[in-house]
Amino acid sequence: MSKLKTLSFLTALCAISTSALASLQPLTIYTEEFFGADWGPGNEVKALFEKANPQCTVIYKVFDNRNTMFNRVRLEGKKIPADIVIGLDNFQKESAAKTGLFAKTAVDLSALSLPFDWQDQTFIPYEFGQFAFIYDKTKLTNPPQTLKELVERQDLRVIYQDPRTSSMGRGFLVWLNQVYSQDQVEQAWKTLAKHTVTVGKGWTETYGAFLKGESDVVFSHSTSPIYHQLHDKTDQYAATEFSDGAVYQVDTISKIAKEQVNQCADHFIQFMISPEAQKVLIPKNVMLSVSSAEIEPHFDELKAHQFEVKAINTDKVSEQDIKAWTEKWQAVLSQ
Image (cartoon, rainbow, N blue to C red; front, top):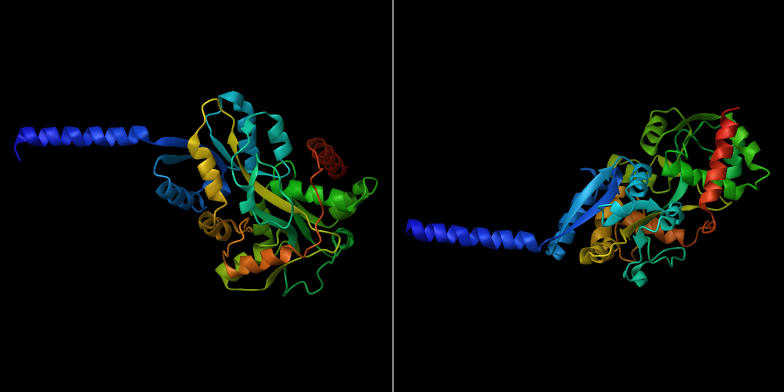
């Protein structure tokens, strides 16, 4: 091939490549570390989604936790560059909705399979978990049967998370305030404080302390023992199941309201609840699937059990409730 023909060929190839890049629709996603870190499911989900939707290219902005992420969303307001936010939970969605920054999706909710009703078209569940206390069966042979028993039993060393910094801690705060009447809550916190080892900033440090033997129980999700079964090849860990009712944490994905609609946003959200994405998300995040499809036997069995569990309806828990309950908790611990 002559130099002139070679140059013409390369110029044409470059023009085609540039045109292809220009046709890609960037999709900017804010997410927390558990999803977007290298060890999380984000990169694999991105690869699968882009293969199925070659017109879209996913760009993650990863935050250390969902509280930091939500604060950034509120700070940026209508100037936010993100198209999607992954990781706000059911106890944050009221506050998120009040910002006016989120838009309804066109996602088909009939694709959801959950042990509770979900009608919100703006905040779409992509995983959920039942809160529970985790214990070592080889060390604790008489686990508590109710949340009230756990609070009262001074022989149990307890670790949980700070509701000001942790979504897990916020979940425990809600749970205790649902089980106890408001005139009993303050005393419950005082009683629990007497045998609480520590209140940690987040789940990672508190669960790590439990594994080191610093407590008898630690607040987590009922899925945690599955992680140990699959990765550590041990069934020595178990989750409590309290007769006074369970509380769920529901992690959601939502899109930012913008004048110019990003067509890739709804496609990505719909993809997140598809069996293909769920098979990546669930084992890595150690949560339960929102899909009716078979994901993995251990997770599938536990999810099926959720439809039989007595659950506490937390739909009416408001932002003001959580703020007031947190202040009461903080006041008790500072005494």
